[in-house]
Image (cartoon, rainbow, N blue to C red):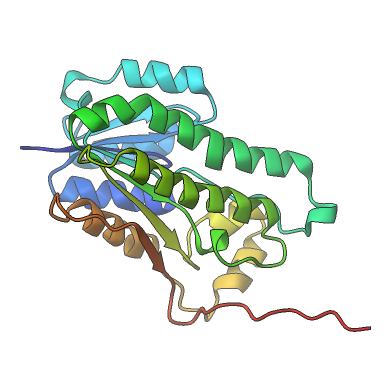
Length: 249
């Protein structure tokens, strides 16, 4: 039986890599994102019978509902939800952060994620499906400038554990994948397009790739139905935990 995955944030990074990984394995994939020009090559690569582009901003709940209602018959029964869409905005300490950046992160990383999850839960329960939420090590380990971003990812991880508890006995699997440093467009978005900052962060660090994370998403999704990975924290070998800070007189 061919299974169907819905992957948000499929225009770049983890999401685009995950679309390729699942489509190559024969899954039908609904690829969502704001940029139609980024989604169309995925459809072209595998054909409209295997990849369907659903163009909407995850922060727009009405557009989300309309796109889901308009899914072609072959894509209407969803077995896997990959809540990948998310972003960081700004690197400033909390006392000088831009409030609009915080709101954008909360609207995208929290509100949109719970809205889509709530919308799809009935059919995921009916199909004994799975939910994979992309969190971050930033939700576990704080660092200067992480403030609201880390808070949103801590929510994703805790919300996932709550889902797991509530869905007990339903057969639905719930996993958070919590990556550390991975070289994608993440830092470009976070710094509002500062390519030099992105290059500085990743140069010489041997970070993870989008394909590395897509492989972990696929691994979790294709485990036997009686197994559940609750949390999967993954970092490049070059990255480890920040030390404690001490301010001295």
